[in-house]
Length: 233
Image 1 (tube, rainbow, N blue to C red):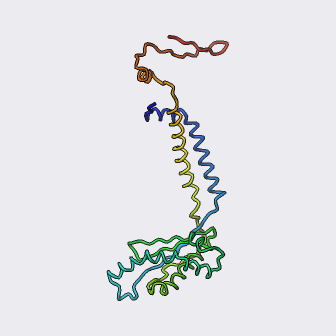
Image 2 (image 1 turned 180 degrees about the vertical axis):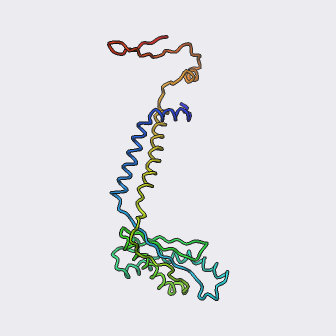
Image 3 (image 1 turned 135 degrees about the vertical axis):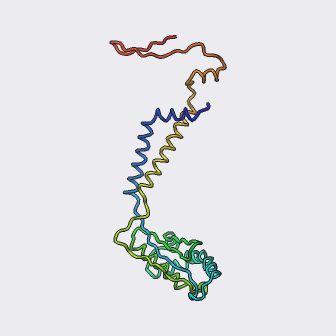
């Protein structure tokens, strides 16, 4: 059967209590999982700057050339060679692949700055990893690419108060609310589509192709002995 938006909206309003309970449970469960079951993850950031060999020699063409190197530098920093060197420097007991999963590198066409971020469940460890990647890249880039125009602009530093980057309980709960509403709406839509009940005179006329001569109405009469149903034609 065809189902209009108005009919779907009416069906949702009729079940608003169930939708409220469903969404409330989804939001509460997501909040509890985010707060108590998912371990927080922190992020530390180091910034590198790509510059010319000397300030006097910097011109527009050199700036463009340096910007084009940013993508290449990012790939070099993600290489196993740099990751293995970082592991040796700070004495980690994980594989290069596991270490690179903690690494985030961002560069922009509008600047000569490369941002190196490391994520870890221990904020102090994240600071150490971010700085180790920056220093390892700085020490090895000349040997790898025969260039030496990279400088550490802003090393990662430990802070007295830090906020985890993951999980984000409020964001997760908001997403759970949206997903809960969508899933409940789809469930109601499915129920309405498989419901073959004729809901109105117009629908009966459309399905049967015959005019409606009369309607049987239901009336509930209150009596001293209880309720009984009387049908009138």
